Amino acid sequence: MLLGSIEAGGTKFVCAVGNEKYEVVDKAIFKTTTPAETLQHVVEYFQQFPDLKAMSVASFGPIDADPTSDKYGFITDTPKIGWDNTDFVGTLKQAFEIPIYWTTDVNGSVYGEYVVLKDQLKHGSLVYYTIGTGVGAGTMQDGHFIGGAGTPEMGHVYLKRHPDDLGFSGICPFHGDCLEGLLSGPTFQARLGIRGEDVSDDDHVWDILAYYAAQACIQVTTILRPEKIIFGGSVSRPHFMKKVREQFDRLFAGYIEVGDLDEYITSPHVPENGSATLGNFALAEKLLK
Amino acid sequence: MLLGSIEAGGTKFVCAVGNEKYEVVDKAIFKTTTPAETLQHVVEYFQQFPDLKAMSVASFGPIDADPTSDKYGFITDTPKIGWDNTDFVGTLKQAFEIPIYWTTDVNGSVYGEYVVLKDQLKHGSLVYYTIGTGVGAGTMQDGHFIGGAGTPEMGHVYLKRHPDDLGFSGICPFHGDCLEGLLSGPTFQARLGIRGEDVSDDDHVWDILAYYAAQACIQVTTILRPEKIIFGGSVSRPHFMKKVREQFDRLFAGYIEVGDLDEYITSPHVPENGSATLGNFALAEKLLK
Image (cartoon, rainbow over all chains, first blue to last red; front, side, top):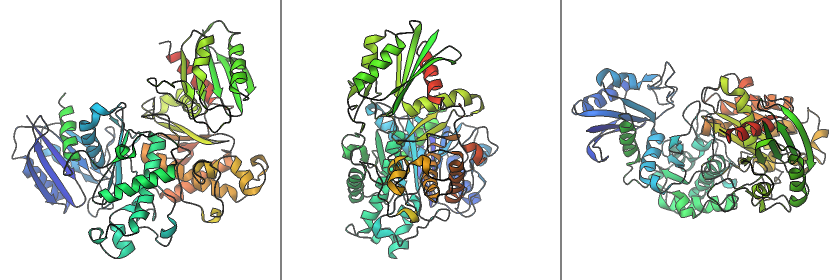
């Protein structure tokens, strides 16, 4: 049995085929161009695998994931040019007569982490933040995704501003200085005029970013009481995670017991950015049960 | 059949007895003094009703509600003097051999609102904030409480400070200017030197408070995607709710479609502060099924 995974990002699409042990047996990466061209690549890629039994898409958003909606399976009002109102699942359904799971990129990732962590979780309760081109998060409780009337958009919360960052107005086109507007990868360029890869680990900007990421951790800790908060994405380097834990400890003042901070606020457990692919395999397989 | 409700607040305890239609058939209010004296009043009150089949406690906190914990049924590290480490449920169990439900004050309230609203909810997804002596919230999804490793403590998040409020350092003993430290009832006295009841509706302080309450709404909207956000407590007057909606609209910039704001951000639907009592009756009855 083969399972398909599509990790649809604003920069690239990672397509993978896995077996019932969730091992990757084949993989391809496509640049995200127009919807027509990119989805054509995806369809042609998976058409090579006639034994595919189910697939799952973890997509950038916002997406419509309400099964009762006319726009179920669509990428909706995304700022990604050309991609708003794209019928993603409908396009796949035209090419493949197999079950297709549809969720957000971060839900794919949090589910992959859940698959490897579930035996050590008491409440099946996790948060997975990604900090890259944008900031988003997927959340689970009791092994289910959280999100009543729709998928979470946790990058768009406001935060207490760092005293050394008051001159920066943030880059979110909707909100200016929301979490995404203050913490996403492109804020390096906006603040410092250089790219994130070129910022040294001892730059003070990391303290500022950690101050905001720690506040996001406080929000989910007080609202969801998760067992673990995981940070993925290009910004979440080890020295940064250390600073996030320090700021969390200082700002939250031990108000709720969360255990060992090195265990509570962590990097992904699935190696090589594989969380979403693994999550997709597991979500696709669930459709067959 | 009779059901018991204990709404345990830091100022007063509201005890009530209800029938299977959740109608209040008797009620008593006790001032919150010492744990020994207050719980003695509670026990003596309910001993008048030998037909009581189950009861539910909705308590101020923090509480331990983890059934596997040694401290299950305790009020834990509360700032309320004399009440930390109080074995609330254990004391009741010594006096009554009936099932006892144990949750937070705000979970009692959100459950009461859920009981009256559930037929119009698609996802059983609600948030109930109370703004009074403190700030807390209860949250539900699919008809279940949210809170993995423990009960939420949603008053202790940080927020973007209002430009006209930067001189106020907040009154939370743990965090200074967290939501509770900026928005709770006692902040009127701390900011203006007068009590909340004496602050006129056109005072600018309401704009400042609404700015913070609206950010709390944005947090739960983006993290939980609830169908409704309800505000109870003494601070949540109608003119204030109007300002909260206006600030939410302005700050969130329509990023997620939440429908009619008058329906989305509302006052309680159970009249006369009765949400927690009704919730307790329903939670007590659930123990009998």
